Structure formats: C-alpha cells, structure tokens
Length: 211
Image (cartoon, rainbow, N blue to C red; front, side, top):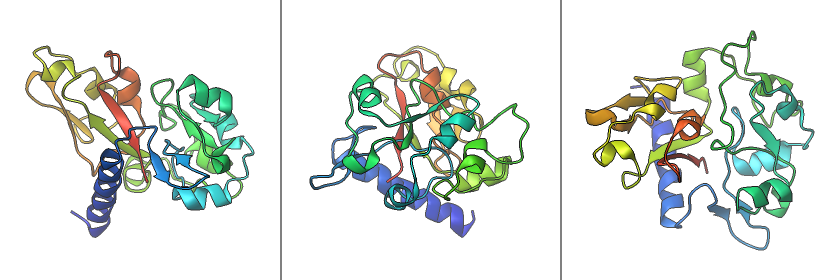
C-alpha cells in the first residue's frame, strides 16, 4: 500500500472519529465560535474547508456544470430542507446532500475531467482527470459509514443495494455474509451513491464529510 493511501486513510479516520466524538453526522460542527460552520459534503476536488471557503467565489459554475445536478448553493432555504444550518462563511457555497442527489463522478459523460472541477475558476475545486485510479487517489469528499443497527443486512435480511450502487463495487464497497456492506476506506471517495440508494429510512449508510 502506498504512503499516500496510508496517509489518506489516516486522515479519514481522524476526521470520522472527530465527528463521532462530537456527536455529529452530516450536520456536525467543524469549528467553533460565533461563525460555526456545518460539516458538509463538498464537490469532488475541493480544498480543505478553510481553504475552500477562502477560495470559492460562490459563482455557481460547478453546479451549472454538474450532469447529475447534485451540487447546489448552501442557502438558508436548502439548509432548512435538510435540517442543518450553514455558518456565515458557508452561505451560497456549493454543497451536496447525497440522500437527495449524489455525485455520479461524471459517469457516462464525455469529458476528460470531472466537469465541476473543470468549471471552477479559482481552484477551490482542483481540476481532476476522469480516470478511475486518479479519482480514487485524489477525490476525498468524505467517507461512507454503515449504521449496523439500521442496516437490513446486519439484522437478518439480505439487501446489498448500496454495494451495487457503488461505482467502485468490490473495492470501496464489498458484500459480506448476507450482503453486509463492508467499506474499504482507501477506495471510498465519498460520492454518496450508496447513501442515495439505501432503501432504509433513515438511511443505514451515509457519508461523513471530510474535516
């Protein structure tokens, strides 16, 4: 396993652990103070949250370019729909709520790069070549996590829908006994297609945003 992948896995584990300890999920807090911001799933290629907020100009071009229309501005109205609240600096920045619409990584779209990253004029989204190995290495929108208390496959029924929805089936998500979803952090890019596909309500698998 490469040093890059090991570091990537470690950072994901730290991010997920920090959110869990804070008692948060997709609506967890990533910084304190009067300008508290909500941990959220950003489009692929995004910089760290602090750098992203300083670089993004809220132009909406990434959302316009998205073929799956999963990227939307983080407005008060959108936040209310998802029972979260954006921090002051986050308003109108691009965000993805996978349960509503997930990132399909520009699958079946003719392009050399992920279109949102190509459309970004400031580098808040780093231009990303649309190749499987590069996407796995460079895209880090978050990390999928399974709630075994909710997942049908962990409670006597065989499901596996999330596994089949994964663009990296057999790598990021594999099916264990009774199709129990097993996540490999070194391959998961946080696209949210598993969360979108989950037939459980509330969903048994969700993406924890990167820190």
